[in-house]
Image (cartoon, rainbow, N blue to C red; front, top):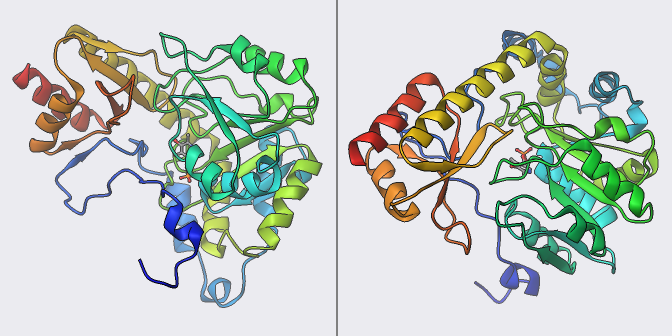
Length: 351
Ligand SMILES: *Cc1c(COP(=O)(O)O)cnc(C)c1O
């Protein structure tokens, strides 16, 4: 700390991302990176980036990328915002739409970045408990006030609401904004993107980090009524005209056009997830039913802290939060077959 710090820099509690260890031999199952390598079309697009592309500023409106996303969703480019990862998209949306006096309501076990943004943007954050089975209490959400912010599927639980449940929330109060963070879309959960054309109170955020195996690229997007998108764009243009660089625009476009890769890669992850869940259940773990590329598990006899340490000593990194209700749970990313086997063998030896 120094005397030059603002009150904000001093008082804020920053988000802590999952560790990115430098050691290549570690089995890294802690940040929900995709188990499958990105599409060959992506690598080809990357190799095709010219010096002239890099010499010039990128398209500030990412027109080609927005058009492709709009086509995939049956929307128009006016329904699309793109940014530097969905964390940035949500941060900009927070300033544009969520930082209002009515505040924001979310659930107690969810993405740990939400309280950070609430603090950064001085927003009243109300936290409603999940039910005992970690599902969202839809009626409690419906009775609550302010903007509704839900990760769906939720992280770290992996559980999701149906499209009909979210539509119920949208319909029962059209004057309430509902933001659905679909970071884990594509691994079996419903998406609410098709509801956008009927509901001007819905904003959906997505990322290429998880579903498209491009966490290193930093591209995310939002879908919503053009008036919502305009607000987010206004904040972006007051902050950084070029959040998505020329390389990222070109590579993201190639990724989103490769529908075959998406189909195959998602199926691979879903099958591996179900196998992993079954093996862990056989080892006396409770495994929440996940529709994401991770599972949330707790052992019936051993503590979460103990298992976390055992795995770590053997070079397997998972994620755990020292937080009420979930201190005995581990969040395990679905890895490659080799990684999942190493995890299972390490646990089997210990148990
Ligand atoms: C990973 C994640 C994000 C952010 O992803 P980016 O890499 O910033 O696009 C947003 N929300 C949830 C719930 C996530 O798990």
